[in-house]
Image (cartoon, rainbow, N blue to C red; front, side):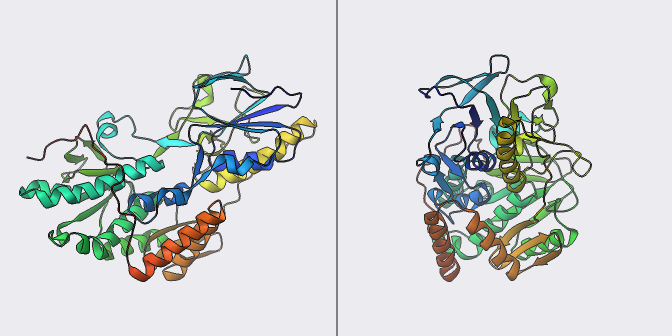
Length: 430
Protein backbone atom coordinates (compact mmCIF):
# COMPACT_ATOMS: atom_id res chain seq x y z
CA UNK A 1 0.00 0.00 0.00
CA UNK A 2 3.01 2.24 0.32
CA UNK A 3 1.95 3.70 3.68
CA UNK A 4 4.98 5.28 5.41
CA UNK A 5 6.28 3.59 8.56
CA UNK A 6 6.15 5.90 11.56
CA UNK A 7 6.48 5.87 15.32
CA UNK A 8 2.99 7.39 15.58
CA UNK A 9 0.06 5.12 16.45
CA UNK A 10 -1.81 4.12 13.29
CA UNK A 11 -5.59 4.40 13.16
CA UNK A 12 -7.11 2.66 10.15
CA UNK A 13 -10.64 3.80 9.23
CA UNK A 14 -12.63 1.63 6.84
CA UNK A 15 -15.34 3.68 5.12
CA UNK A 16 -15.63 7.29 3.99
CA UNK A 17 -19.28 7.85 4.90
CA UNK A 18 -20.67 10.22 7.52
CA UNK A 19 -19.16 8.31 10.46
CA UNK A 20 -15.74 7.69 8.93
CA UNK A 21 -15.25 11.29 7.82
CA UNK A 22 -16.44 12.67 11.17
CA UNK A 23 -13.84 10.52 12.92
CA UNK A 24 -11.07 11.44 10.48
CA UNK A 25 -11.84 15.16 10.82
CA UNK A 26 -11.82 14.82 14.62
CA UNK A 27 -8.27 13.43 14.53
CA UNK A 28 -6.85 16.41 12.65
CA UNK A 29 -3.60 17.81 14.07
CA UNK A 30 -3.25 14.94 16.53
CA UNK A 31 -0.09 12.88 16.85
CA UNK A 32 -1.72 9.98 15.04
CA UNK A 33 -1.24 8.47 11.60
CA UNK A 34 -4.67 8.17 9.96
CA UNK A 35 -5.27 5.78 7.06
CA UNK A 36 -8.70 6.00 5.44
CA UNK A 37 -9.81 3.23 3.08
CA UNK A 38 -12.86 3.25 0.83
CA UNK A 39 -13.92 1.51 -2.39
CA UNK A 40 -14.87 4.93 -3.82
CA UNK A 41 -12.69 8.04 -3.91
CA UNK A 42 -15.64 10.24 -2.97
CA UNK A 43 -18.12 10.74 -0.16
CA UNK A 44 -21.79 10.37 -1.12
CA UNK A 45 -24.50 12.50 0.44
CA UNK A 46 -27.02 9.66 0.51
CA UNK A 47 -30.14 11.63 1.57
CA UNK A 48 -30.26 13.19 -1.92
CA UNK A 49 -29.70 10.03 -3.97
CA UNK A 50 -33.39 9.96 -4.86
CA UNK A 51 -33.00 13.32 -6.62
CA UNK A 52 -30.26 11.84 -8.81
CA UNK A 53 -32.59 8.92 -9.59
CA UNK A 54 -35.36 11.25 -10.72
CA UNK A 55 -33.26 13.74 -12.69
CA UNK A 56 -33.33 16.59 -10.19
CA UNK A 57 -29.58 16.64 -9.55
CA UNK A 58 -26.43 15.47 -11.28
CA UNK A 59 -24.39 12.95 -9.26
CA UNK A 60 -21.31 15.14 -8.87
CA UNK A 61 -23.35 17.70 -6.92
CA UNK A 62 -23.89 15.24 -4.03
CA UNK A 63 -20.40 13.73 -4.08
CA UNK A 64 -17.16 15.16 -2.73
CA UNK A 65 -13.59 13.88 -3.32
CA UNK A 66 -12.22 12.37 -0.13
CA UNK A 67 -8.63 13.33 -0.88
CA UNK A 68 -9.61 17.01 -1.06
CA UNK A 69 -10.70 16.92 2.57
CA UNK A 70 -7.26 15.89 3.82
CA UNK A 71 -4.74 17.04 1.22
CA UNK A 72 -3.28 19.72 3.53
CA UNK A 73 -2.89 17.46 6.57
CA UNK A 74 0.19 15.65 7.75
CA UNK A 75 0.08 11.93 8.59
CA UNK A 76 -3.16 11.42 6.63
CA UNK A 77 -3.34 8.82 3.88
CA UNK A 78 -6.22 7.70 1.67
CA UNK A 79 -6.22 4.51 -0.37
CA UNK A 80 -8.82 3.39 -2.88
CA UNK A 81 -9.39 -0.20 -1.79
CA UNK A 82 -11.97 -2.73 -0.72
CA UNK A 83 -11.29 -4.38 2.63
CA UNK A 84 -11.85 -8.12 2.34
CA UNK A 85 -10.83 -9.61 5.68
CA UNK A 86 -9.83 -8.68 9.22
CA UNK A 87 -7.21 -10.59 11.18
CA UNK A 88 -7.55 -9.24 14.75
CA UNK A 89 -4.86 -11.59 16.12
CA UNK A 90 -2.24 -10.10 13.78
CA UNK A 91 -3.82 -6.63 13.90
CA UNK A 92 -3.90 -6.72 10.12
CA UNK A 93 -6.47 -6.27 7.36
CA UNK A 94 -6.48 -7.78 3.88
CA UNK A 95 -7.58 -5.49 1.07
CA UNK A 96 -7.82 -5.54 -2.71
CA UNK A 97 -4.47 -3.73 -2.89
CA UNK A 98 -2.55 -5.56 -0.17
CA UNK A 99 -2.31 -6.03 3.58
CA UNK A 100 -2.03 -3.34 6.24
CA UNK A 101 -1.26 -3.47 9.97
CA UNK A 102 -3.02 -1.23 12.46
CA UNK A 103 -2.81 -0.13 16.07
CA UNK A 104 -6.50 0.77 16.12
CA UNK A 105 -9.08 -0.31 13.57
CA UNK A 106 -12.38 1.51 13.09
CA UNK A 107 -15.11 -0.04 10.97
CA UNK A 108 -17.38 2.60 9.43
CA UNK A 109 -18.57 0.53 6.49
CA UNK A 110 -22.17 1.70 6.67
CA UNK A 111 -25.11 -0.31 5.43
CA UNK A 112 -26.38 -2.13 2.38
CA UNK A 113 -29.81 -3.10 1.09
CA UNK A 114 -31.57 -5.83 3.04
CA UNK A 115 -33.66 -8.13 0.84
CA UNK A 116 -34.43 -10.38 3.84
CA UNK A 117 -33.10 -13.44 2.06
CA UNK A 118 -35.40 -13.17 -0.97
CA UNK A 119 -33.03 -13.96 -3.84
CA UNK A 120 -35.64 -13.43 -6.54
CA UNK A 121 -36.37 -9.88 -5.42
CA UNK A 122 -32.65 -9.21 -5.05
CA UNK A 123 -32.14 -10.43 -8.61
CA UNK A 124 -34.84 -8.32 -10.27
CA UNK A 125 -35.51 -5.25 -8.11
CA UNK A 126 -33.53 -1.99 -8.14
CA UNK A 127 -31.71 -0.71 -5.08
CA UNK A 128 -30.64 2.86 -4.30
CA UNK A 129 -27.70 2.92 -1.91
CA UNK A 130 -25.03 4.43 -4.16
CA UNK A 131 -24.59 6.90 -7.01
CA UNK A 132 -24.15 4.18 -9.68
CA UNK A 133 -27.36 2.52 -8.50
CA UNK A 134 -29.20 5.87 -8.63
CA UNK A 135 -27.97 6.43 -12.18
CA UNK A 136 -29.21 2.97 -13.10
CA UNK A 137 -32.67 3.85 -11.79
CA UNK A 138 -32.66 7.15 -13.69
CA UNK A 139 -31.72 5.41 -16.92
CA UNK A 140 -34.28 2.63 -16.41
CA UNK A 141 -37.11 5.10 -15.75
CA UNK A 142 -36.38 7.04 -18.94
CA UNK A 143 -35.71 3.93 -21.02
CA UNK A 144 -39.06 2.51 -19.94
CA UNK A 145 -40.86 5.56 -21.29
CA UNK A 146 -38.92 5.36 -24.53
CA UNK A 147 -39.94 1.69 -24.80
CA UNK A 148 -43.56 2.52 -23.95
CA UNK A 149 -43.62 4.86 -26.97
CA UNK A 150 -42.66 2.02 -29.28
CA UNK A 151 -44.83 -0.85 -28.09
CA UNK A 152 -48.37 -1.48 -29.32
CA UNK A 153 -49.00 -4.07 -26.60
CA UNK A 154 -51.25 -2.46 -24.00
CA UNK A 155 -50.19 -4.79 -21.17
CA UNK A 156 -46.52 -4.13 -21.81
CA UNK A 157 -47.04 -0.35 -22.03
CA UNK A 158 -48.93 -0.39 -18.74
CA UNK A 159 -46.15 -2.34 -17.03
CA UNK A 160 -43.50 0.01 -18.40
CA UNK A 161 -45.38 2.98 -16.92
CA UNK A 162 -46.15 1.29 -13.60
CA UNK A 163 -43.67 1.98 -10.78
CA UNK A 164 -43.62 0.05 -7.53
CA UNK A 165 -41.66 1.36 -4.55
CA UNK A 166 -41.37 -1.08 -1.66
CA UNK A 167 -40.82 0.58 1.72
CA UNK A 168 -42.56 3.58 3.24
CA UNK A 169 -39.62 5.10 5.09
CA UNK A 170 -38.07 8.46 4.14
CA UNK A 171 -36.39 7.02 1.02
CA UNK A 172 -39.59 5.47 -0.33
CA UNK A 173 -41.75 8.47 0.51
CA UNK A 174 -39.35 11.00 -1.03
CA UNK A 175 -38.84 8.91 -4.16
CA UNK A 176 -42.59 8.43 -4.63
CA UNK A 177 -43.16 12.18 -4.29
CA UNK A 178 -40.42 12.98 -6.81
CA UNK A 179 -41.87 10.54 -9.36
CA UNK A 180 -45.33 12.04 -8.84
CA UNK A 181 -43.97 15.50 -9.59
CA UNK A 182 -42.33 14.20 -12.76
CA UNK A 183 -45.69 12.74 -13.81
CA UNK A 184 -47.44 16.02 -13.13
CA UNK A 185 -45.16 18.58 -14.70
CA UNK A 186 -42.36 17.04 -16.77
CA UNK A 187 -43.24 13.76 -18.48
CA UNK A 188 -46.36 15.08 -20.29
CA UNK A 189 -44.15 17.62 -22.07
CA UNK A 190 -41.39 15.13 -22.83
CA UNK A 191 -43.75 12.40 -24.07
CA UNK A 192 -46.78 14.07 -25.69
CA UNK A 193 -47.43 10.85 -27.64
CA UNK A 194 -48.06 8.95 -24.40
CA UNK A 195 -51.05 9.24 -22.11
CA UNK A 196 -49.07 9.96 -18.96
CA UNK A 197 -52.28 9.71 -16.95
CA UNK A 198 -51.85 5.95 -17.25
CA UNK A 199 -48.60 6.12 -15.29
CA UNK A 200 -49.02 4.61 -11.82
CA UNK A 201 -46.87 5.08 -8.74
CA UNK A 202 -47.46 2.47 -6.05
CA UNK A 203 -45.89 2.81 -2.60
CA UNK A 204 -46.09 -0.41 -0.58
CA UNK A 205 -45.57 -0.34 3.19
CA UNK A 206 -45.55 -3.42 5.42
CA UNK A 207 -46.87 -1.62 8.53
CA UNK A 208 -50.02 0.41 9.10
CA UNK A 209 -48.35 3.79 8.62
CA UNK A 210 -45.70 5.55 6.56
CA UNK A 211 -42.56 6.98 8.15
CA UNK A 212 -42.66 4.58 11.12
CA UNK A 213 -39.94 6.47 13.00
CA UNK A 214 -41.82 9.77 12.87
CA UNK A 215 -44.89 11.04 14.70
CA UNK A 216 -48.42 9.86 13.76
CA UNK A 217 -49.24 13.39 12.59
CA UNK A 218 -46.21 13.48 10.26
CA UNK A 219 -47.10 10.03 8.95
CA UNK A 220 -50.71 10.99 8.23
CA UNK A 221 -49.72 14.27 6.60
CA UNK A 222 -47.11 12.56 4.40
CA UNK A 223 -49.74 10.07 3.24
CA UNK A 224 -52.18 12.91 2.51
CA UNK A 225 -49.51 14.72 0.48
CA UNK A 226 -48.74 11.58 -1.54
CA UNK A 227 -52.34 10.67 -2.27
CA UNK A 228 -52.95 14.27 -3.27
CA UNK A 229 -50.15 13.88 -5.83
CA UNK A 230 -51.77 10.72 -7.20
CA UNK A 231 -49.58 8.11 -5.49
CA UNK A 232 -51.31 4.85 -4.59
CA UNK A 233 -50.36 4.06 -0.98
CA UNK A 234 -50.72 0.41 0.09
CA UNK A 235 -50.32 -0.35 3.80
CA UNK A 236 -50.12 -3.61 5.74
CA UNK A 237 -48.92 -5.39 2.62
CA UNK A 238 -45.73 -7.44 2.34
CA UNK A 239 -44.06 -8.16 -1.00
CA UNK A 240 -43.31 -11.87 -1.31
CA UNK A 241 -41.84 -12.09 -4.78
CA UNK A 242 -40.89 -10.21 -7.93
CA UNK A 243 -39.93 -12.16 -11.03
CA UNK A 244 -39.16 -9.19 -13.27
CA UNK A 245 -42.75 -8.72 -14.41
CA UNK A 246 -45.11 -9.40 -11.51
CA UNK A 247 -45.00 -8.25 -7.89
CA UNK A 248 -46.67 -10.80 -5.61
CA UNK A 249 -47.80 -9.90 -2.11
CA UNK A 250 -49.26 -11.62 0.95
CA UNK A 251 -52.70 -10.44 -0.17
CA UNK A 252 -54.65 -10.78 -3.38
CA UNK A 253 -53.03 -7.60 -4.69
CA UNK A 254 -50.65 -8.10 -7.61
CA UNK A 255 -48.73 -5.54 -9.65
CA UNK A 256 -47.43 -5.78 -13.20
CA UNK A 257 -44.35 -3.59 -13.32
CA UNK A 258 -41.06 -3.22 -15.17
CA UNK A 259 -39.60 -1.11 -12.36
CA UNK A 260 -39.56 -2.17 -8.72
CA UNK A 261 -37.40 -0.08 -6.38
CA UNK A 262 -36.58 -1.76 -3.06
CA UNK A 263 -36.42 0.66 -0.13
CA UNK A 264 -37.78 -1.73 2.50
CA UNK A 265 -34.76 -2.16 4.71
CA UNK A 266 -31.02 -2.01 5.27
CA UNK A 267 -28.47 -4.13 7.09
CA UNK A 268 -24.92 -3.59 8.24
CA UNK A 269 -22.19 -3.99 5.65
CA UNK A 270 -19.82 -6.13 7.70
CA UNK A 271 -16.39 -7.57 6.86
CA UNK A 272 -15.27 -11.16 7.43
CA UNK A 273 -12.89 -11.93 10.27
CA UNK A 274 -14.66 -10.94 13.48
CA UNK A 275 -15.99 -13.59 15.84
CA UNK A 276 -19.53 -14.66 15.01
CA UNK A 277 -20.82 -13.67 18.45
CA UNK A 278 -19.90 -10.07 17.59
CA UNK A 279 -22.55 -9.93 14.88
CA UNK A 280 -26.25 -9.24 15.46
CA UNK A 281 -27.74 -11.73 13.05
CA UNK A 282 -31.07 -9.93 12.58
CA UNK A 283 -29.56 -6.75 11.18
CA UNK A 284 -26.01 -7.94 10.42
CA UNK A 285 -24.62 -5.18 12.64
CA UNK A 286 -21.55 -5.36 14.89
CA UNK A 287 -22.07 -5.39 18.67
CA UNK A 288 -20.28 -2.53 20.40
CA UNK A 289 -20.13 -1.19 23.95
CA UNK A 290 -20.91 2.37 25.04
CA UNK A 291 -17.51 3.48 23.69
CA UNK A 292 -18.12 1.91 20.26
CA UNK A 293 -15.55 -0.78 21.03
CA UNK A 294 -16.38 -4.08 19.33
CA UNK A 295 -17.31 -6.88 21.73
CA UNK A 296 -14.32 -9.09 22.65
CA UNK A 297 -11.74 -6.72 21.08
CA UNK A 298 -9.70 -3.97 22.74
CA UNK A 299 -8.51 -2.05 19.69
CA UNK A 300 -11.29 -2.63 17.14
CA UNK A 301 -14.17 -0.16 16.99
CA UNK A 302 -17.31 0.21 14.88
CA UNK A 303 -19.35 3.37 14.29
CA UNK A 304 -22.35 4.44 12.25
CA UNK A 305 -24.86 2.15 10.57
CA UNK A 306 -22.73 -0.97 10.99
CA UNK A 307 -22.54 -0.56 14.78
CA UNK A 308 -25.19 -1.92 17.15
CA UNK A 309 -25.04 -0.16 20.50
CA UNK A 310 -28.02 -1.22 22.57
CA UNK A 311 -29.47 0.67 25.52
CA UNK A 312 -32.74 1.07 27.37
CA UNK A 313 -33.83 3.77 24.93
CA UNK A 314 -32.51 1.89 21.88
CA UNK A 315 -32.88 -1.86 22.51
CA UNK A 316 -32.21 -2.58 18.82
CA UNK A 317 -29.39 -0.09 18.42
CA UNK A 318 -29.46 3.47 17.20
CA UNK A 319 -31.32 4.35 14.00
CA UNK A 320 -29.28 3.82 10.84
CA UNK A 321 -29.18 7.50 9.90
CA UNK A 322 -26.61 10.26 9.47
CA UNK A 323 -26.95 11.90 12.91
CA UNK A 324 -25.96 8.88 15.06
CA UNK A 325 -23.08 8.21 12.67
CA UNK A 326 -21.79 11.78 12.88
CA UNK A 327 -22.09 11.91 16.65
CA UNK A 328 -20.36 8.55 17.14
CA UNK A 329 -17.52 9.54 14.80
CA UNK A 330 -16.90 12.82 16.62
CA UNK A 331 -16.92 11.22 20.06
CA UNK A 332 -14.70 8.31 19.06
CA UNK A 333 -12.08 10.77 17.82
CA UNK A 334 -11.96 12.28 21.32
CA UNK A 335 -11.94 8.85 22.95
CA UNK A 336 -9.06 7.59 20.82
CA UNK A 337 -7.00 10.60 21.85
CA UNK A 338 -7.96 9.96 25.49
CA UNK A 339 -7.06 6.29 25.12
CA UNK A 340 -3.58 7.16 23.88
CA UNK A 341 -3.12 9.45 26.88
CA UNK A 342 -4.43 6.81 29.33
CA UNK A 343 -7.37 9.03 30.22
CA UNK A 344 -10.93 7.80 30.89
CA UNK A 345 -13.27 7.42 27.93
CA UNK A 346 -16.64 9.10 27.58
CA UNK A 347 -19.69 6.91 26.97
CA UNK A 348 -21.78 7.68 23.91
CA UNK A 349 -25.20 9.25 24.41
CA UNK A 350 -27.26 9.91 21.31
CA UNK A 351 -28.82 13.37 21.03
CA UNK A 352 -31.84 13.03 18.75
CA UNK A 353 -32.06 16.26 16.77
CA UNK A 354 -35.23 15.17 15.00
CA UNK A 355 -36.17 13.73 11.63
CA UNK A 356 -37.72 15.02 8.43
CA UNK A 357 -38.87 14.01 4.98
CA UNK A 358 -39.91 15.91 1.89
CA UNK A 359 -42.77 14.77 -0.32
CA UNK A 360 -42.45 17.34 -3.05
CA UNK A 361 -42.83 20.99 -3.94
CA UNK A 362 -43.86 22.94 -0.79
CA UNK A 363 -44.60 19.66 0.98
CA UNK A 364 -42.53 18.22 3.84
CA UNK A 365 -42.86 16.94 7.40
CA UNK A 366 -40.49 17.78 10.24
CA UNK A 367 -40.34 16.27 13.73
CA UNK A 368 -38.09 18.17 16.12
CA UNK A 369 -37.78 17.18 19.80
CA UNK A 370 -40.13 19.95 20.93
CA UNK A 371 -41.85 21.02 17.73
CA UNK A 372 -43.58 19.20 14.90
CA UNK A 373 -44.79 20.91 11.75
CA UNK A 374 -45.70 20.19 8.14
CA UNK A 375 -46.19 22.01 4.85
CA UNK A 376 -44.27 24.77 3.12
CA UNK A 377 -42.32 25.93 6.19
CA UNK A 378 -41.22 22.35 6.85
CA UNK A 379 -40.16 22.17 3.20
CA UNK A 380 -37.91 25.23 3.59
CA UNK A 381 -36.43 23.79 6.80
CA UNK A 382 -35.75 20.48 5.02
CA UNK A 383 -33.99 22.30 2.17
CA UNK A 384 -31.92 24.45 4.52
CA UNK A 385 -30.74 21.49 6.63
CA UNK A 386 -29.85 19.34 3.62
CA UNK A 387 -28.20 22.18 1.75
CA UNK A 388 -25.85 23.06 4.59
CA UNK A 389 -25.14 19.41 5.37
CA UNK A 390 -23.51 18.98 1.97
CA UNK A 391 -19.72 19.02 1.92
CA UNK A 392 -18.11 21.83 -0.08
CA UNK A 393 -19.25 25.30 -1.13
CA UNK A 394 -19.41 24.28 -4.80
CA UNK A 395 -21.86 21.45 -4.07
CA UNK A 396 -24.05 23.71 -1.96
CA UNK A 397 -24.10 26.37 -4.66
CA UNK A 398 -24.88 23.90 -7.46
CA UNK A 399 -27.65 22.17 -5.52
CA UNK A 400 -29.17 25.52 -4.50
CA UNK A 401 -29.17 26.80 -8.08
CA UNK A 402 -30.66 23.53 -9.32
CA UNK A 403 -33.43 23.68 -6.74
CA UNK A 404 -34.11 27.33 -7.54
CA UNK A 405 -34.27 26.64 -11.28
CA UNK A 406 -36.45 23.57 -10.80
CA UNK A 407 -38.82 25.53 -8.57
CA UNK A 408 -39.20 28.47 -10.96
CA UNK A 409 -39.38 26.45 -14.17
CA UNK A 410 -40.95 23.27 -12.74
CA UNK A 411 -38.32 21.32 -14.65
CA UNK A 412 -35.57 18.74 -14.09
CA UNK A 413 -32.72 19.20 -16.53
CA UNK A 414 -30.81 16.04 -15.57
CA UNK A 415 -33.15 13.52 -17.16
CA UNK A 416 -30.38 12.12 -19.32
CA UNK A 417 -29.62 8.52 -20.23
CA UNK A 418 -25.85 8.88 -19.88
CA UNK A 419 -25.20 5.25 -19.05
CA UNK A 420 -27.94 2.98 -20.47
CA UNK A 421 -29.12 0.33 -18.05
CA UNK A 422 -30.06 -3.10 -19.31
CA UNK A 423 -31.44 -5.56 -16.80
CA UNK A 424 -30.17 -8.94 -17.95
CA UNK A 425 -32.82 -10.59 -15.80
CA UNK A 426 -35.79 -8.72 -17.29
CA UNK A 427 -38.73 -10.78 -18.52
CA UNK A 428 -41.18 -10.35 -21.38
CA UNK A 429 -44.62 -8.95 -20.56
CA UNK A 430 -46.22 -10.65 -23.54
